[in-house]
Length: 194
Image 1 (cartoon, rainbow, N blue to C red):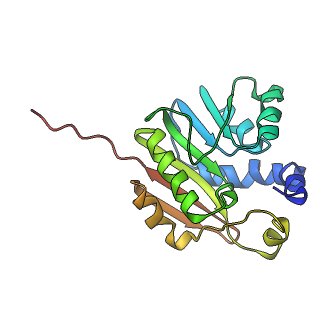
Image 2 (image 1 turned 180 degrees about the vertical axis):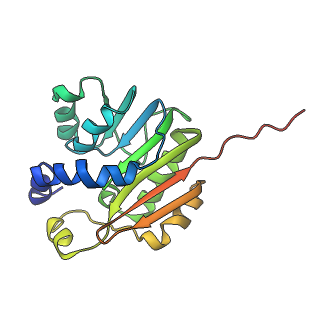
């Protein structure tokens, strides 16, 4: 992230938006389960809120400085912070009840790597687990905040097919003016009687 983007993500304005609007909208009527993975938490504003809603929260962060910042945050002492890449997650298959991603996928530098991240989210989810999140929709201010930064926007109108290609079912996508939210489920394993 560039300097402008880092300042915005640590601002009081962004914190209030995340706490009062974004997370209540994204997590509305969602059962998260007992073991959560947050992918790409950045400075941890969403992580702090999720930590209060979970018995076991793991945060996967690719940036070493941000991972260290998260580890040193006293409000996140119960969160396991793992430094790693969302396109090659260092977790066993079927490890988490929910995987969450908040406004970070546009930082993944190509559509093919974004799809790899979706496949990894599917792999580490338990059967019947949920992939939940949000990402941004283009606006002039959003573009300015990403000047010289990675910004590969996801088209919410075609995102359902990308989630489906990764294996997800029960896909829901809802758009607002500046963002979209999504929910998708890893199907339960059906065992045929012998």
